[in-house]
Image 1 (spheres, rainbow, N blue to C red):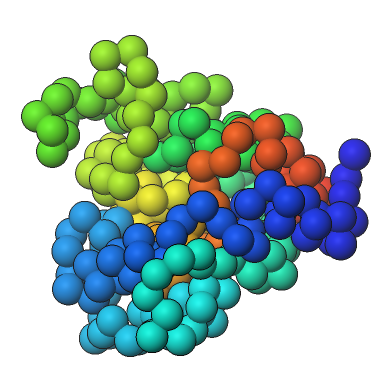
Image 2: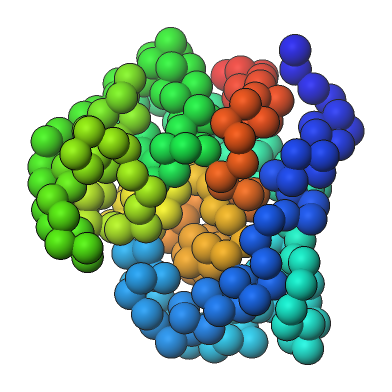
Length: 257
């Protein structure tokens, strides 16, 4: 069943995908400071052109995501505006439908959130293939040593790239796997999150994706024109909670084809 906008908005708030989300204010502000200090772990592979001071990042996140704008508010609950989420979902749908209207588009789909957003990426991958896109799988099996000293490798599940570590898909912000993908075969379009999205956007590939309120890099990348669309949401709620959002998104894509 495809929800109306009002039904989707209610669902996002009820499941904490938006509204009062699980990510704390303290965590958000810590990540905004880290990005302003150009900590590589928070840049997601993006090379930023602007100064992007801490106040700049907070102001942008208040505008694009709906976190509390007051810099004096430092502890407690923070928020994602569900209307901003839905607006960005609709914008993402427009970008994907435009891509699918091209002749034989070549697509990479990737996620650093196998326990949350994977379900959305799988649905988008299936939909794209059904409507004429070619899902690429470059650098499958490519390995590298993570910051923890463990060997991790790129593995694809039904066309969606993830990092695998000793038989388990793992959460990652790392841009290096996407860089390996692009080095082997450059796609026309990328749907992703975290460093997968940041590295693709930084390479000049049209990239859309999803980002939490504590992931400012992709929103800064969008402000600089490196990321086409970043959808603000809690990126790790129960996978089944994303079903109405996914239905709404696919319906909006289909309407534009």
